[in-house]
Image (cartoon, rainbow, N blue to C red; front, side):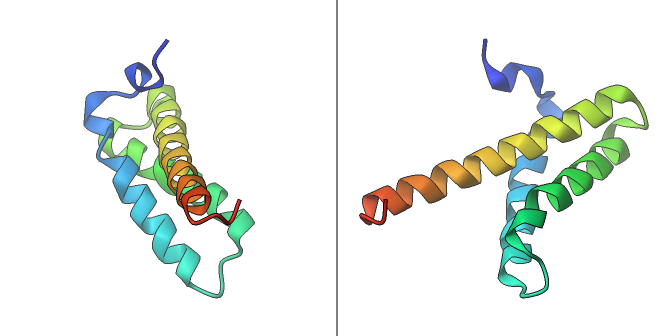
Amino acid sequence: MDFVQFIREEMYILIPVLWTIGHFLKMTPYVKSWLLPWILLVIGCVFSILLLGFNIQAIIQGILVTGGAVLTHELFKQTSMKIQGKV
C-alpha cells in the first residue's frame, strides 16, 4: 500500500506549504519544537477544510498532508545529519 494514494491530488500543494510554515515557525524563538507538529496539524486541517468543505474527509486529508510534511522534513533532516556525520 502506498501512502500517497490516500491523499487527494488537490491536497498535495499543502505538503510544501506546511513544510514552509513549519520552517518559519522553527526559526521563531517563541515556538517550542515539540509544538510544531501540533500547530501544523491544526493549520493543515484548517486549510483542508477551506479547500474541501467541513467534513470528515477534509479532516482526514489535513492529518495526512501534515503527516507528509512532517515526514519529509524528518527524512531530509535525518539524512543530512547522517551525511554530515552527526548521527
